[in-house]
Length: 107
Image (cartoon, rainbow, N blue to C red; front, side, top):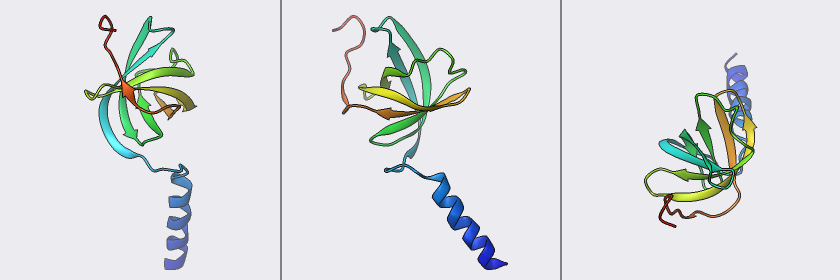
């Protein structure tokens, strides 16, 4: 019985994490910008890695497949592509390296 439990745990651990780089837990403010900067939306960044993040929302219906994402007070902007979607969360892949983000009106 003990071997069955250990086998199950090994299989479950392999099924949970399928990313090339594991994400670290986070609780940061995310600001999405899309449609040429005319639309913005706030999200909570729940986990983050160098190549992607998980974002939580009240509802993901109005979020496009690709957008600019600024995470936290460090003000780094990334182009993000939605890889999976549920009613309240998104998993995104970053398409570029972090770069400085100038707030609206200061460009």
